[in-house]
Length: 532
Image (tube, rainbow, N blue to C red):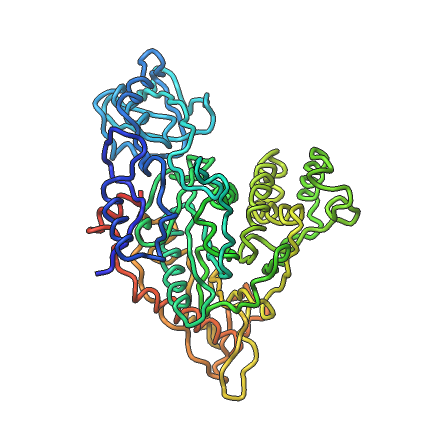
């Protein structure tokens, strides 16, 4: 029987802080027995467990009736719905909020006893409504700061080990995926990791390690199925909902880069949840220090004025000892690399240098609001571009079909058909970012796949039931196959169709191998609870 381990925390009260919950200890022992490389010991937390529950003492201390706001309704991002959190009094409602790390606002109704737990970054939010006609009583609980989990660090030393030299990691590729742990990303993660395992098992593969970096305030349902390290997010509300959870990604990567887990391989391959491995990468992508391989995103502006202003402001604040006077970023004609953090392959040493800068630039693009709006959802990508520019990591950037890293069907194709009737394409990753629709020449819809609608839609509660997809139609020269009107030209070539079929085949093979209930849970109900 295959055994797994993780850091999924049960709702168990313990007397000491530095404890891994009992379930984890059993699973960790199983991993030790197997000598598991899939779940190395460096994944183990050495600090507190993964629960977002706090003590009764904190709850009582946080809830003083004189601070409550009667006849007041406060709003915020919902942490727990009131219809599922019935409390007999305002005191009990407040205490239930104080026990949740993500909760800063509570709202209680005296008739229904509904107790809504919410999150708001504003420590003094304006009421949505107030006055004698408002039945609700509301209150605030101070935001909790500090880590809930910690890991062994690269530079950890004991008194007897002060002269030890950190060994160079072996030459291999460590795949790193970042996620906020929401249900939509988690079904994609399960498929991505399954395709990774398939191609990592190929003879001679350079794929030797995989880590999901989870920026979330508590463990989720994949801790025992996917090798994971969890880091506390800046935006606690993102555990429930927020408009830009990727703003927490760079800081989590920076924190991970200092852990012992990051020393497994010489190079890192950063990927997204909606990528699929379709073959093992070639060793040619393992470039030396100072050089990296990225993917070209043509919507990234080389001269984006708002990002260049952010870079110049940063350069104006740091000295020449940090960024020398002759550094390319300080010269006229400054341009940004037209790429993003994923997919990118770079040395672990370079990532360790770039990640803190990446986090710095993410923070600088979040304010003022004008900059945030101007850069939109691309601001995390621009922050990465600025970071690698300052860090002096030159990215070799190509789009499909020339890229060795990735292609995005059906916009990209599988290259030229060889003499034996097969296609040879460079990419080892395929990205299902598009929602392709295939029509015949008479505009009859033949096939569709949109990740946003998969499993009932992207806002469904998890874990999703994974189902196989119908294969796209086979190639027929006279069928007049075409894509939706979004694509121009609409004509679907045999090469594009082939790449699409490869991607869906890999997707389905992964689904076939995955259990309905994520590893580590006995029932679907247990997994659903962890996914909340």
